[in-house]
Amino acid sequence: MSTHAPRRRRVQRPLAAALPIALLAALAAAVPAAAGSRVPADSGAEHGGQTPAGEARVIHTATLGDIPLGAFSNALLPGSVDDDRGVDLGGIGSDIWPAGRKGEFWTITDRGPNGQIKIDGKKRRTFPVPGFDPAIVKIRVCGDHIQVLRALPLTTSSGKPVTGLPDQEGRDEAPYSYDAQTPLAYDPNGLDTEGIVRTRDGSFWLVDEYGPSLVHVSARGRVLARYVPKGLGLKGADYPVVEALPSILLHRKINRGFEGLALLPGGDLVMALQSPLSLPDGDAGDASRTTRLLRFSPGKRAVTAEYAYRFDPVNVVDPSEDDTSELKISSVVAVGRDRLLVEERTDKAARVQEVRLGRGADILGGRWDDDSTSPSLEQLADPAASGVPVLAKRLVVDLGPVAGVPGKIEGIARVDDRTLAVINDNDFGMTDGAGAFDAQGRLVDSGVETEVAYVRLPHRI
Image (tube, rainbow, N blue to C red):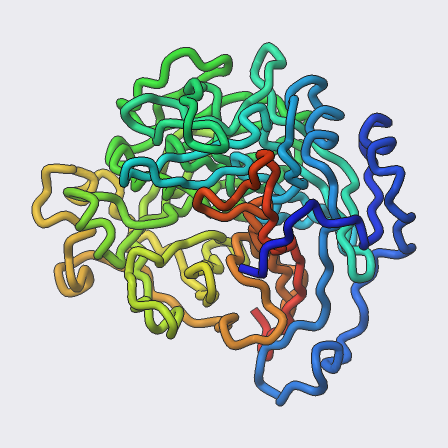
């Protein structure tokens, strides 16, 4: 994290947003956006001179300027945020999806500003802007800045906001106010949105960490259906909830549900669990290097395949890290009928692997989906040696040593056969601990910005 700034940062980068007039008025102080959205030619020298042949390099970066979160949210859903506590729009780096035109992408926020504060030795999950509604945000890379073109708030069947608050008491973390002193209400409509894809009919599919769930959203942001694990028992949601996913997913680690989502050419979806399941318990999940990918057919409204994915050792992904529980999958991208790019990461490093989803690797409905199996899939030291058809993988690029790549990359998009666009999650400028807010309850900003970086690869994908 960067050094904390004591006050809200001043707008220094150009901004423009094709948003409601109320938000445009709120951004009147921002200078006009620079013309054009083309990515500069691959000079190789933009970030410190020529890079040796055969190495990946960043060829361009752009940064999101400061948009007050209250103004952004209230322009979409009037009255939804009464106090943004000095927080700016952020968190849009949960995923990135090409929007068709060069330099334009769809992105998705996560559940909103949140942190952790210890009270009496126990961590409490804080939500300083509890009225925040997750949103789909369309952006354009314009020179060195990110321009907001459009935003779609997520809403329920009756048009109510879908908040980012936890769903169920006893299953999700209890929500608290910014200072961890006041309990907040759970919200069965709440979503911790992560991956995003857009289909030909203009609708979106998202994944969520709470359920974990797969969410179908209309072109205007209305939740059409939320697919959750069998046995979840989510009650009171103001949209259709369908128990269509394997019940084994009920063992997802807290805050580590679905994070990656890919759209295959034939229309099927692939969801990635961010971390191994807590099977049979949290210690086993924390020590495991085996997570799962699931294939979903929108036509059948059902999971049709499941795959075992094996992380590399944590010190291979991130030489500075020795805690296996820090390994995560944050993005999956389809690059063929049965080929995927999979991003393995910690908060400081990331590697992109390629896998093929062969029929022989399907473990759906077998013993590994039975939570009484012992040892569990997650407990196996060498799943392949135990007869599990683990997905074979090939390293595409190690982003850790690439200069100019931001930390905590959560979204990856394929720009062309030699270029990736990556985006980071800046956590809305928040940090954990009591020092995240000053004595007046205003954010002490981390200084970490939302960035899009174009990475040129040495070989074709």
